[in-house]
Amino acid sequence: MDTTTSPQRAGRIELALQKIFTRSAQVLEVEDVGGSFRLVTLGGDALRDAAWTPGDKIQVMLGGWVQRTYTPIDWDGELGRMRFLVYLHGDAPGTQWARSLRAGDSCAFFGPRKSIRLAPAASPVILFGDETSLGLGAALSAQATTYMLFEAGEHVRAAVDRLGLPNAGIESDPRALAAQMAALLQAHPDADIVLTGKAGAIQQMTRLLHQHGTAAKRRQSKAYWAPGKTGLD
Ligand SMILES: Cc1cc2nc3c(=O)[nH]c(=O)nc-3n(C[C@H](O)[C@H](O)[C@H](O)COP(=O)(O)OP(=O)(O)OC[C@H]3O[C@@H](n4cnc5c(N)ncnc54)[C@H](O)[C@@H]3O)c2cc1C
Image (cartoon, rainbow, N blue to C red; front, side, top):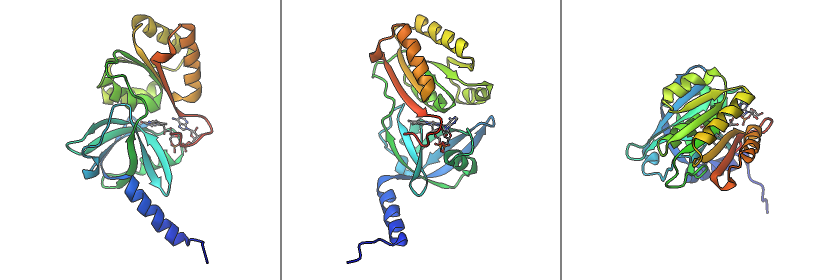
């Protein structure tokens, strides 16, 4: 008996599986934000009544089984709408996809799924991250008073302003970053701490938190990317 599967049949099975497990949406709007970011609005019936909690992630299908992970900024289950912000960091599949995206395109994605979760009464929160964490900052600040520190250059300013992120510090110098984090820890000793973005930067910040005696149980961290690795989830 021939047990091989033709490429066409494999493709049809793939498509059928994707249809079962993903949500299908339409791109309602794509907005360029300051040259380094694109703000994407998706809509459709499949987005109604989704169980979304701020901090959750989605995995967008870019074609075939290639997928990249992004963080919804907000999600209106009644209207069937959600938004996320893509950082255009270089010439990679997610960035290329976002650059070429147009209103009217279709978009399939997995999720929303749990990633960062605040405790129900968590307030305040200190969020450390980078360009990839701005959307998370917007989502969390709708749930709790959030003090944000982004390891990034001034190119993120336009996105911080566009999302109206409150209490957001932007800093690229490592010593100044450490000083600003120390000041935040001192000003908000009862804050929960969320670390996201580049894996190495999270490790450095974790060491700093150790030095300040911050309890591990108050910390959540999630690497969003790491040099040389693709499509972290
Ligand atoms: C839970 C979660 C939530 C996330 N939310 C968001 C979000 O809301 N918005 C957002 O923009 N990103 C977000 N990310 C990060 C995003 O998924 C990664 O940056 C992803 O690698 C982008 O895919 P790509 O195809 O552009 O690059 P890849 O093909 O994955 O990577 C290609 C190369 O680029 C490098 N690279 C990847 N990201 C960056 C970066 N930011 N800066 C510099 N080099 C990079 C990789 O190390 C690799 O060497 C999230 C990631 C996770 C895990």
